[in-house]
Image (cartoon, rainbow, N blue to C red):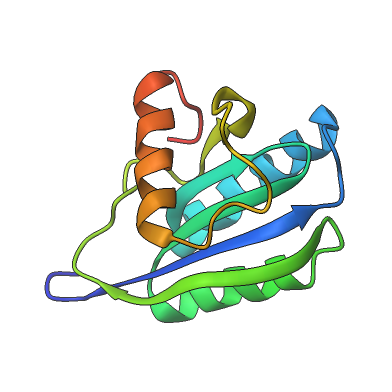
Length: 135
């Protein structure tokens, strides 16, 4: 809706699925379906050790999505890096883009607690992967 501000939440969590491709595919398929229905967009950075994710949408939709994530046994040590209103979506073209964090050789887990650096990393990884799924 015009004039409606976007709520953005950035978090990290410890992966409890390791590098299991089937589990990651399940997470992404469910997230994309749920996000499309709720009007949530974002990006998920994944490594065998952890996740970093940006969720964007209405406060209620992002809140409900994040509550599911916190209760999901595949995520541990969930930590919010930033949460609040934003002027616009940064990842509005994706119901849930996915980027492989192993493509960032200097990435150590847990990722730095600097949301701006994480957003820059995500944008860079998405730009380097023009076929990123989740649109």
